[in-house]
Image 1: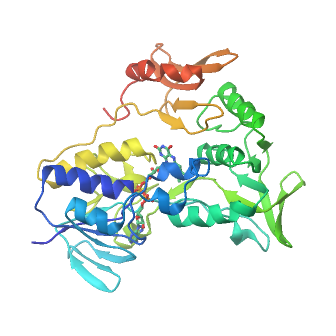
Image 2: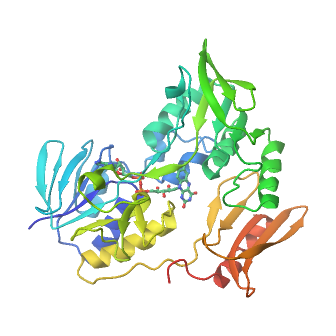
Image 3: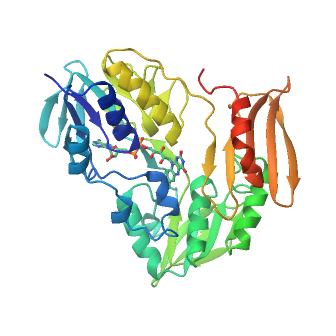
Length: 381
Ligand SMILES: Cc1cc2nc3c(=O)[nH]c(=O)nc-3n(C[C@H](O)[C@H](O)[C@H](O)COP(=O)(O)OP(=O)(O)OC[C@H]3O[C@@H](n4cnc5c(N)ncnc54)[C@H](O)[C@@H]3O)c2cc1C
C-alpha cells in the first residue's frame, strides 16, 4: 500500500499526523523532514530565554518518539528535492518514493534583509530550534542586542531579552510598534510598557548597513545615525516556502495555492501551515493550521471536509504589556473606536453598520477577549 507522505515535521505536519491517526489507524504514513524531526512548539522560541529554556528542553519529543507515538515512519535530516505530481512520486535524500497522497507542510522562511556591509550575513533570524540554539549562545555573552523589526516577533524577543537583563534596541520603519496589527494608541501603549522595562526604540528608520567593528557590529541607519551591538537579530517577517511547489509545477501566489479542501492545483497533493495560501489567505499562526489539519485529516481518511476558520485572535507574548489582536479583514470598510484608561486600551473596529469586525486589546482589557471574539464574524465561514 502506497503511503500518505507529509513533508515537514513542524506544528502543521505533526498536528495533521495526530489528527489523521484519530480517524485512521492503519494507512501507512511517512513523514520527511529536513531537520531532526523533534517536536517543539515554535511560538515558545520568542519567550524561551525568560523561561530558561535551551533548544534541547524546548524539544519535548524526538523523531523516534513521535514515530512510535503516532505509528508512522519518519525520515529526518532528509530534504525533498523534487516532486513529480503526474507520477505521484518524489525524490528525497536520493531515495524515490511513490505516494497515495502528498502533503506539503514546509513552513516559511525568514525574509532576508537587503542590508549592505561586510557583516550583513551575520544577522540572526530565529525560526527553528537550530536558530534558537545559536541565538541563545550568542546572546549569552552579549550586553547590547539590536532587533530589526518592530512587529509581533520583534516585540516578543525584545520583551524576552529585556527580561533576562539585555540592553535592547528595536528598529522599525513605522512610528509605532506592531503598526500593521494595532491602531496607534494600542501600539504606543506597548511601546511605553516595553520602554519601562528598558527597551529602547529607533522608530521611523530602517537599517542600511551592518559592519564588523572588532568583536562587535556597527549598524548604520537611514537617518545617518549608527548603533553598536554585540548581536543583531532580524525579525522582519516570514515568507511561505514555495520553492518545492514551484519545482513541482503547482500554482503558487503568496503561498502554495490551495482550496478549502487544502488541495493544490495537482490532484492528491495538499498543503497546510505557514507555506499555504488557503482560499486566498496566508495566516502564519497556530490556530489556522490546527483547523486546517482537522479538516485535511478527514479528507485524507475519505470524508472530504472543507476547512472553516472561526475568528482567531492572536495573543502577543509581551508580558510587559499583554496584547490580544483580531485584525479586521484587509478589505473591511469601517473605523476604530478606542477607549483608553491608565491600565488598558480597548480598540474595536466596527464596519459601517456598526458590526464588530476586529479588535485590539491591551492590559486589563485582554480579559474581554472571549466575549468580543463571540461577536466577530468567521474568517472563513
Ligand atoms: C518566534 C516565533 C513566535 C511565534 N509565536 C506565535 C504565537 O504566539 N502564536 C501563533 O499562533 N503563532 C506564532 N508563530 C507562528 C507559528 O509558530 C507558525 O505558524 C507555525 O509554527 C508554523 O508551523 P509549520 O509546520 O507550518 O512550519 P514549520 O514549523 O516552519 O515547519 C516546516 C517543516 O518543513 C520542513 N521542510 C521544509 N522544506 C523541506 C524540504 N524541502 N524537505 C523536507 N523538509 C522540509 C522543515 O524541516 C520543518 O520540519 C510564531 C512564529 C515564530 C517564528
